[in-house]
Image 1 (cartoon, rainbow, N blue to C red):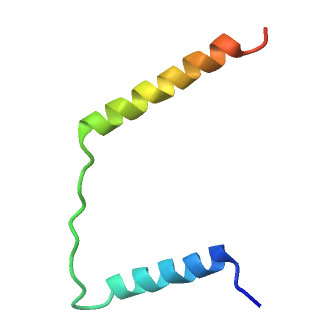
Image 2: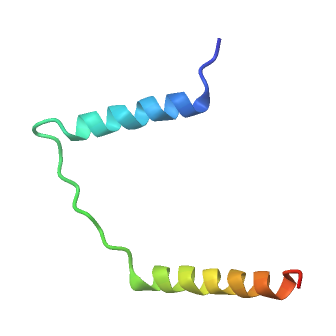
Image 3: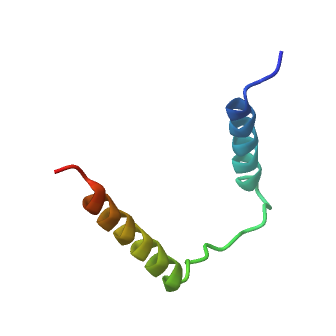
Length: 58
């Protein structure tokens, strides 16, 4: 019997989180995303909303 993929991914995620919380684990600094990524995402979202309004039934 095979395990569902979601269960396997969940176990891998928990194992990773546990290992990263152990003493002596390497510290990985939080990296802020560049502003241009947010701008592109915002522009794409605005375009999708505009397209949805154009094709929406009245």
